[in-house]
Length: 301
Image (tube, rainbow, N blue to C red; front, side, top):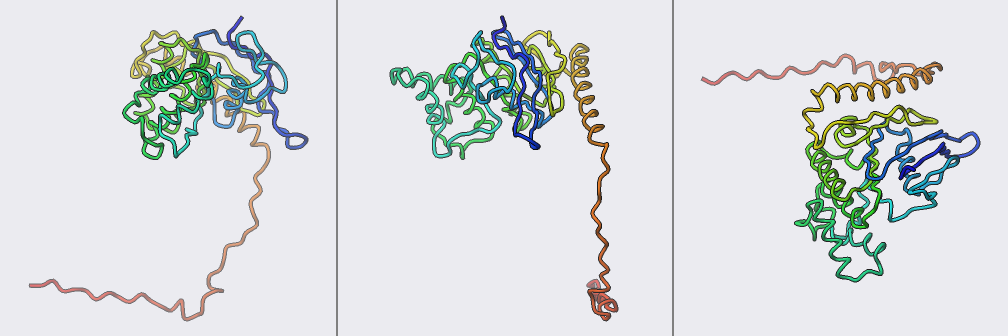
């Protein structure tokens, strides 16, 4: 049995005329210790999918199981790192991480909690910023604080909802490597949501595209059987990697083309607006004005 198992999952928001079928017939199986990336366009339901696995949302049909048990709600077993940092601005890095540790390990000795906090911060190389507040941190450091806060609860499953999309390319690559290092040391199961195909190919064991909604579902998976550690530059020249990228992007472009074809059936109604005749709003003498010529300066001897 798969460690994470989604079977015939549907998710609907709203009711009546405002009903939106976000996901339909989603089936996903993830093995323990596997790294899976799900790629797709913005607004197709990727965050909804993560929320269902995390237990933050409940499916309207189908079932979500983790380790053979149906997901009934949130659990420390499943840690989530969202796109926004969600840090308390008046707390330091250490204080923000301590919040989650204090909630999950409230019955543990103080020394044990302290060690867990410091180790999690050290794993993302933030020990020098231990006493700084979010306003004193760069975007990358804030996101690393968010990762450390999740790691401090020692979850078996790490759910990453586009956590790096707002970062510059250099910072993004640094945190990618830190996440991979943590994954290999802890043997966690990771599901990464991203809209970056290259990021998915660099990090994941499998890449699965999500179709364009409404009623989005998972498309054909691509097994990334490239050796680790991977070289970012080699991904652009390696024939196998280029073939994988082509398959994923072709699927996503075909899905986008279907969406445009579906939306293109109705003509666009333009507003009935006539251009303004400025001659009706200016006095007649206005049009006789001429700009004064500037006096030409003679060059000095």
